[in-house]
Length: 129
Image (cartoon, rainbow, N blue to C red; front, side):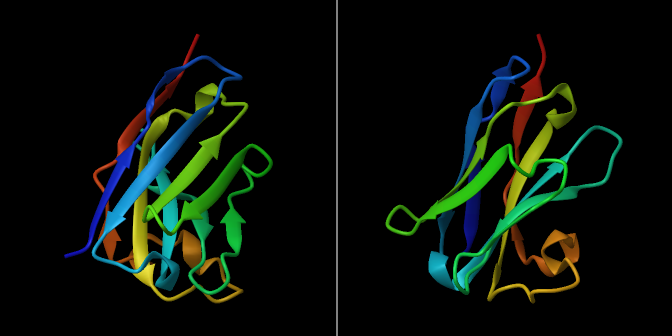
């Protein structure tokens, strides 16, 4: 069965860095797209980043572009989200999700919660001094 487990969250000061991990099982990673989402209290889940199953293309929300980097290690069946220059507004529960195939190169489908079939339970990231 498909399973996703996030880890790496914690408390970090503004300007600091964290690397989140999404350990997957039950899938062939290079055939599945992985998305990272986050949810702040009282807000809806929003797309942060995505790595495509097609050619490894990456996508980022404007709010994190240039600060976050998504990558994958197929041998370890794990996807990472490197977060640098963290800001208090990055505070949220971060989730990874997966779906078979790749997103179309239009319409920002990768940011749609409904497009994904499987979700992890999330890991808390708190950015505060």
